[in-house]
Image (tube, rainbow, N blue to C red; front, top):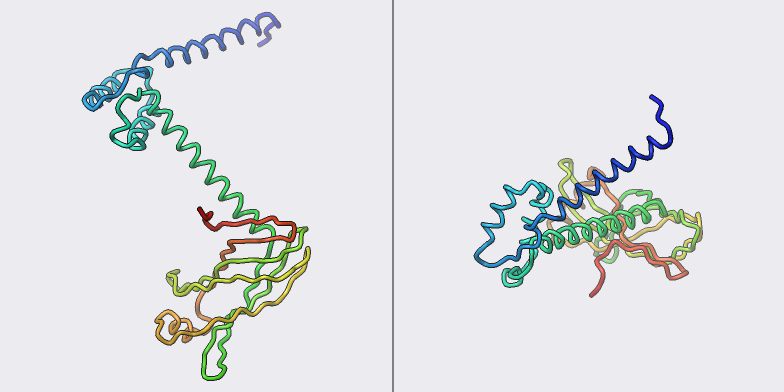
Length: 226
C-alpha cells in the first residue's frame, strides 16, 4: 500500500501522540506520589492491585524495593521512590555482573593454559605435589605475573583439592613457558591423601584470576581490598 509523504507524517505523529499519552497516563497515577507510613503499606498494595496504570513490573519493583530500605527509613518515601530504588539497585547489579563477565573473558582470551599433570616428588623425607603446565601469553604486552586456581574434581564433579598458583615471571607477547609449581603434601590432610592416591584419575579445571603486565595494567577477578 502506498502512502504519500504527508500521510506518512500524519501517521507517525499519531503513533507518537499515542505513546506520549500512554506515558503521561502512567505518570499521572496518583499512587506513585503517595507517601508510605507504618500503617498504610497494605492499603497501598491493595490500591496497586486496582490501579491499571501500575504495571506488574512496577509492583515487582515495589516488593523488592521495600526490602532494600531499613524498616525505619521506609517511612516518608513515596511509591515512586521505592520503585526507583529497586530499579537503580538492579541496574547497578547488572552493570557489575557485566564488568565481572567482561573481566573474566578478557583474562581468558589473553592467555592459554596447558595442564601437563601433577607429579609426585620426595626430597629429604618430605613429599611434594608438582603441578606442571605450559602458560602462554596471548596478549600484545609483556606479562609479569599470573594467578589462578588449579581445581581437582572427582568423577561426580565434586571438589577434591584446590591449588593456588601465583607466578611472577616475564613472558613477552606470544611467549610460552613450561612451569613447575610444587607445594608440600600434608599427611594430616584427607584431601591431600586423596589427591596423592588418585594418580591421574581426577579431572583438572584451571580458573585464572589475575594477569599483570609491565605497563601496570592489572586484570583481576579477586575481590577489591577495602
